[in-house]
Image: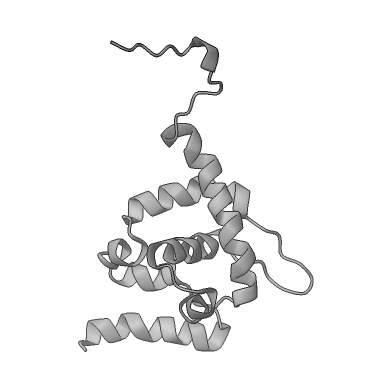
Length: 137
């Protein structure tokens, strides 16, 4: 490991140890080519998707705890969709409990569907079967 790599890794480890807060985005920023491998999309695509779903998945902090930020919600969901790993397995890489993941992932999937379906899923609103004719030779 070179000294340049040490300079990057130590602050991330320090952030985790001191604040108990670390997320996949910080780790992925270290090596940008890993975005494609880890989330199956480019950083630009991820940031665009994050900007679209943030209003739908943002939660408010409470007196008891801080809310899980939208970027962590989206990252956990995309990782789940990319790998098919169980919530129990994802808890190690996301530092989010399986119980929280079981609500975060479906909510985020619904938000992704809501924001992308208008542009990428063109479906006719009505299908009038009476106007469909079958012609046979």
